[in-house]
Length: 387
Image (cartoon, rainbow, N blue to C red; front, side, top):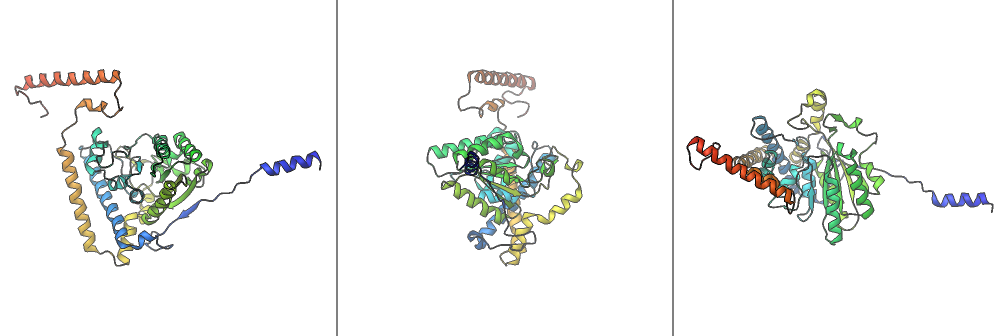
């Protein structure tokens, strides 16, 4: 054998040609027709009704929150209109001991995990106490900065692995966030360390005013998982049955030591990016109208009606019940006394550094002084101008 033969043999032993596929999953299409067999959980009509109820509740809450912002009773708000199936599918698949690391449209998941509607309203109203969840204190708060919470999720998952806890960190971000370095760093770490972590890319086709086609040349966003040695899959994000099923498989695989996953949920942002945005400046009305036929709530509604598991009387009662629950939450939001200004320091660190303690004390003192001056000016002892 010649030296050339040896070189060729060596190269053959070291060169690896890798081939990958990204699978797409759908169970119920936009005409409410089954495209594949129902998973076991969905064969129980009660489970499907639970999914439907939560999507309806999320949408009614969403509509009310927008109305509050428009009337000056709440701050900027990010709508989840049209994306309810993604969050509800996530929430239904998670166990109570898992940790949700959300962005700002996962209301359907948060509500299922014990976050109250009043908490969410307080948060968007600028009250830090809205991120202190009594029922799920270990879930991370809403993250508005894009993708910065992905390394946090990797850290949470690392803690689970080091402690040998059968728990999973579920992180959610948008299609635009998957172009950030934070996403790639967290993905790479999750792959190398085989962390119990599931990353959901909520691909609603728009990163504020940037359409999906201008964000990445990748055919799918799920294939970004391949570079990290992580399993990637695409799912119809308007099919709550498929979303729930896909999430359940990924979460249980991570829980049982099978490593992380990336799930790209294909959906559409029916609303403006936030209430501070006007999508009509960059998006055609016809595009939005075309997407309405993929409405996730109508899809499941029609299927339940076709199978005889739902009717209009039940539907009207459900909407009325959800509207009452939302109004109660809104009233609780209105009835919550404002947090004192110094509370802005209370959620920064486990132990507040000395420099911030001094600033906090100064703010408290200013508040006391201002209140005293206000009381003297009005002549009402013990009552401030905004009392």
